[in-house]
Image 1 (cartoon, rainbow, N blue to C red):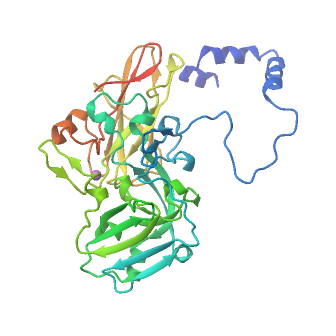
Image 2: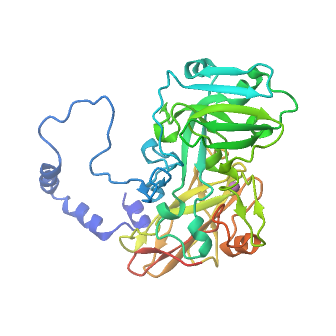
Image 3: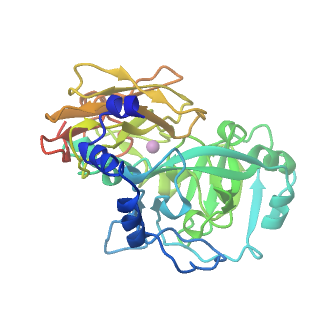
Amino acid sequence: MEARRRFLGVTTALAGALAGCSGGNTQQAAADADTEPSLLGKVPSDYGNRSPHEKSKRTYADSKTPQAGSSRTPLQDSYGIITPNSLHFERHHAGVPEIDPAKHTLLVHGMVDRPLVLSVADIKRLPSVSKVYFVECSGNSGGEWSGKGAPDAQRSHGLASCSEWTGVPLSLILSEAGIRKDARWLLAEGADACKMARSIPVEKAVGDTLVAYAQNGEAIRPEQGYPLRLIVPGWEGNINVKWLHRIHAAEEPFYTKDETSKYTDLMADGKARIFTFDMDAKSVITAPSGGQKIAGKGFQEITGLAWSGRGRIEKVEVTTDGGKTWTAAQLQEPRFPRAFTRFRMPWTWDGSEASLACRATDESGYVQPPRQVLVEARGLNSNYHCNAIKFWKVQADGSVTNVEA
Ligand code: CO
């Protein structure tokens, strides 16, 4: 105990409190009387709630059209790699529909030999899998393109979350429907009022794509697509169609409004990229991060999240000196492909200003770039697909702020 305390350099306040206990348990008993109840507590509940002391919540960007809005995950408060269902980010184009699972169906038609209408109950009878995947809106970190950036991790990176999804491989449903060999693209359409729809290459659809009905051990929440949503691992969030009710197989992509007026990337020369599906490797330090304050000099773990749409995270490097030197962080195991990976690095803060950042490398060998490299390659016309290295500044008083990059 003594050796560990010295090694971590925990605050002198804690050491003092421990010393005060050495003469007996009087102080401890007095403290317990304040905080530990002597009366019976609450009875069990039928659906749990968190402690009233926990205040972490999604931020909701208010707008004139609130049903076409978004809310962001408080990544700065996250632990491990799983996002609680209550805190998973949302992005909607026509609000959250109220759907009765007993009446909801999935139609599979177009270039198939056996068109299908499957009920939710039908789908739940099929062989299922559970997989951990992140979902990230391609507009996540869009404000970072300008270099000004957002003041905290929630507003800079909170359009990304990670869950264990349970459902049926789409390949199974497509083979039951007898998808034809010359079908190259699928339309996936949602049952919300705007019929949000995206084109998906068959190659990805028969790869790792899931028709999911559960998230983190319970039914998918209405705002996440209840009762069925598509999970297209590692691809931009919008293509993970929620309230999935129709799949249409065809030779050509569909050029829906949701992939032409939105989710195309306007380059500096005025041409637009379309079907930019992969979310490239990215990472962010969640603690200490913008808006937080380090309590004082001494040991302070640096931790954060890294992810890549192209597979596993292989390496995360951390700098505390503004990018002059980089050190490999510890990666939490197991590391799932196309899922959040938690990284951690021990650090002793000496009380002086510091510039913190992290840089992810994925299994394809891709290394997360600085913002300037992205701007040179793609210009400043589009807000989509910003995966730039994110810096936080630790001020001498311990407060952590955004850095213009
Ligand atoms: Co894109």
